[in-house]
Image (tube, rainbow, N blue to C red; front, side):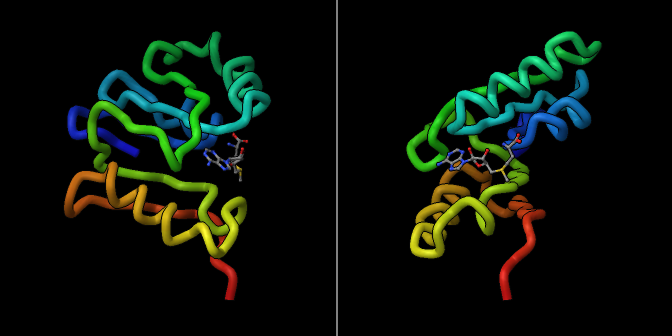
Length: 110
Ligand SMILES: C[S@@+](CC[C@H](N)C(=O)[O-])C[C@H]1O[C@@H](n2cnc3c(N)ncnc32)[C@H](O)[C@@H]1O
């Protein structure tokens, strides 16, 4: 996810570190302590470490202080039960700036 001021949020540690730069602050969010711990371990010594952070939170209830202008979601079609996907999509809508872009690179089931 990318905030209007240049911040992004991604749920994958590798992507967070790969994309973060002084012009694009990235937040990696996951509900798993282990995922966050591993992401921090893998990336905290990178030269761009000041351009991102990792946050343990439940995306369904988390309320960011600013809206994002890009959402890259690796969770929707693989870790979210079908009966929860409408609420998940609505949550994305709620924290995405109007007319901007949600991306879900996870494979979509037929
Ligand atoms: C395909 S994996 C994404 C990759 C993982 N974040 C990583 O960095 O390796 C899906 C992730 O969604 C996370 N997840 C599932 N439900 C979630 C929720 N309600 N809020 C935040 N993350 C959630 C899981 O913990 C899991 O790590």
